[in-house]
Length: 299
Image 1 (tube, helix red, strand yellow):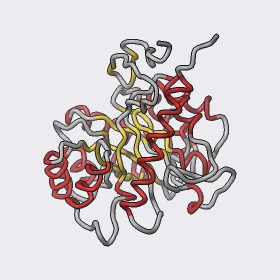
Image 2 (image 1 turned 30 degrees about the vertical axis):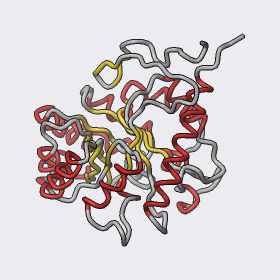
Image 3 (image 1 turned 180 degrees about the horizontal axis):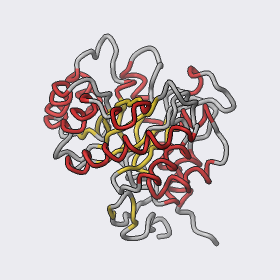
């Protein structure tokens, strides 16, 4: 009977919305929606959007996280996702902050407009040719651009999550949180990307998640080796690598994170379907273990 416990307190506040508590039992995986990023869905056998979405449906993923190309592409993906009863959880786009408000390009506006009426997060990575990664010198220009983007996103009824990316201007979770706090909009949040965190930091996981939690909209995970910086070792299927993902998932549970979790497969060669099968098996095993560990009763 000790297994039927509450993972999260009822009505946990997160990202300006509230979610109800959920219950779990032995062997139950995390309730967070688990989606596939398009970094790992395309190969010679799955070149079309329809074939990729059909595959992730068959494998048990809750949805998709693609890169933005154009509005037509978004419509095509949305139509395919609707047919398969799946969701686009996040749409990846990039902005160069050097122009301040002029960094809000027609393409970014189009990306936001293409998501109107959909519960999809715009994933935004920020780059710069003027400022070094993590430099606060670029904050004024970035805040200007993000204020405008946040307003456009509100009009479209969507949220934006800053995407920390190694070697980009926003490359750390703290960079993303700092900017989101300065903008102060409840529809602007942050992402925790495991592979990028391992590449640029890899320390103080608990403090990083605690810092991000008030604005944590999305998490991405993958298998990885410990103590390395080589991307081929930092991004692997979830059932591979020496880095123990269990404590990361357990910490997310204990922190009350109920949002979507994306699977990163960038640069993994071979069959997309086989790689995704391995990661889905890894997800079910790891997340069930994390639930069990997070809900253990103290004697």
